[in-house]
Image (cartoon, rainbow, N blue to C red):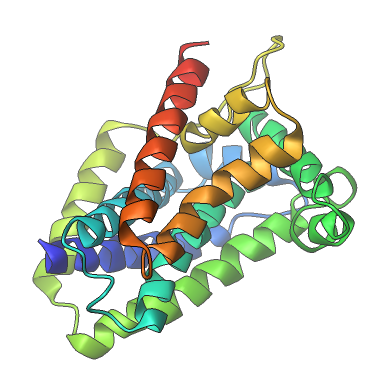
Length: 268
């Protein structure tokens, strides 16, 4: 099970990277929405490769979550070096940020709103918020330029840091890659990648994994709802290496609460 999940993460991330390279050629960050619509309607097989990029990225996140949960259940943290456990934990927010910037750079109704919300959340960080916004977002002044660069370079960094580690252990077989490529291809042929046209509504839902934060922003200040609260599981996962029981209880409580907020946001 462990090898199946870890290699699934590597294979789907590799598929997402290769399909992302293909659709990056007709994409222009100066006109993100026009480029995205053009990929869907004008570029030959553009809709398929965009869907392949979308679903392989979603599967990467889901499989990485499952891989982490399995490591917690089987208590693999104590059997790993601290730096190996740290790489696994840091890859979670990295993949989430890659997916989030992927929504932002398409600049549709969801991406546009997600970018503005992320910019305000970054500015809510005490002392360094302005610099964090200039480093990662600044979408209100510079468009999707920074999220686009983050999306590209962070993908390469994650693939190089985690994928090559698995390649070092065992060369990724064609059977592994072919199995996950078949799953991603089937999803891409059945369902189109999401793209939300501008709507005359006051409620715009963000990415599915962001709905809990979006709902929590109704009740708490931006820093606590969008920065502190989403950072808790990462802190708990690091703490699991030294205090597994306390970290496990904290993670369960966080997952339960976030699941409630996510459902509330999805049902609006």
